[in-house]
Length: 633
Image 1 (cartoon, rainbow, N blue to C red):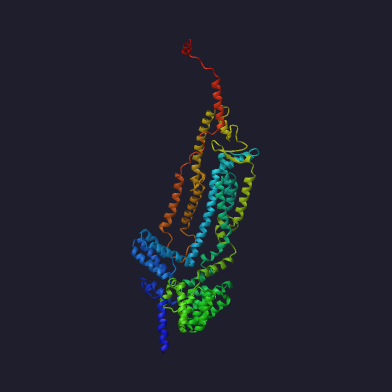
Image 2 (image 1 turned 135 degrees about the vertical axis):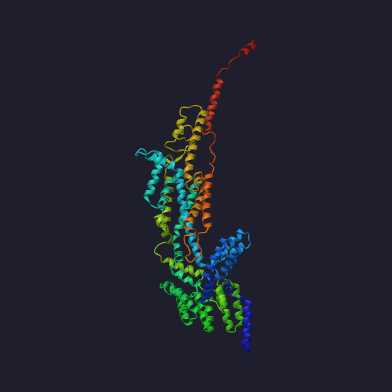
């Protein structure tokens, strides 16, 4: 009897030293009686966290914020955070509204939100899927639109090259028609964005400047890398599929044991998930106190997967409840053999040592559990504290669930992102990297093999396209036939320069008007036309992300269990503001100053004319004036 009292006192001391006091207070603070009753039912069913009540409270808090009742909303958000464990939205909303009110608590709450995001597999996976898809679409769209702008910029070069090479064999319509005809033909072909990108690369490569080629190659490499790793997107498919095995198994981390959840998990027949399925079923039975059946399922799980530490922990829990402490110790020790840093295994081991009155060993295990973060487990599984449990159960870790998603994704016949992008690309996205690499190699080869005489460049006076075949270089500058015709037959360099400058100003003004009309169709075009390629691609990417956000109302993949409507006014204002700003920047972009020197023709011509003028002046005899003759006489 005395030994028993001593054991009880020591146990109480250890619990006070290493454990946090638990209470059911947060559930009692729920105002809605139905939600409060549902919460108690979930606690009795063994739920680790009250996610549904937390989402309901979060929705109520958002409604209060819209009504301007901040303090009441703040209390509900804090309560929602306390009930959920790893639901990040309450902290993100707190941080956003505290920032608007200059409350210094916004930073800690923002950090806590990101920490919860890293701990919640489902939220983490949805964010990852949306982020991966928006990056992929933005990269492809930026490459395509940048090539379109470059085609508009260098279309006169392309048209000139076609005419020079094939005008002897074919009749061409007026130059102003060719661009429209080319566009109509491409659109009517409906070959998909992937092949359009290929055609545009081949069309503009020879005309591009060095900096533009470098940026274009960078974008091609990035899109090719996304394409090459596209099969990895299959890991995300089970996450967004509510009927997937991964999603069904993950529900044991979010819900208590009920008939529907038991049916969903028991219905998984694929042997690839046998160990995880039996582990989940055993855990659900353990929560209901059906210990013998729970033990059988957990034993089946560790038989199929001998390295599955969570199954050993929950199997040890079953033995602990059955007061078979030796086998309980064996279960926890097996878990620690697999994962020596598991705080839960150390904690449950310490509790088992207490029951066996091995207090020194218990003290070491509980201390180690504290060092490894057992308090973090209690925070992320708040409902476990409402039941005053002696030992805690283990659920699927984020790593376990990602492994399951990877296994399930490998069984897909297609590629997830290729299926989404297929209607737009009309080409398998996971093979698009081959198309881009081959196209780039062909474009570079064409650029190298094209003779210098056939390469198109700018007239040094008016910037119109000219090539080695039609360029006039008699005056020491590469001039187009029209500019050469303006000064044909003239001998005065000053007169020629004046006529060339007059023509240049007229042509450049006309070109600027046409370029303005073309490039304002899409943001970033003005920058690309002026050679500011980095700024142009930035505004194109920002506009694409904004348009996608408007089209999807924030997210492409949405959480069907979310109780919050995603139609927030900020989801409309922010993307529209980005689009408007991008257009304004393009519209207000000033034309760059002409960098050409004042004199177009070579200095040698002016020197020759000057020397000729001086020679003629020296050979003409000086006329004698009458008064000079009188002085002589």
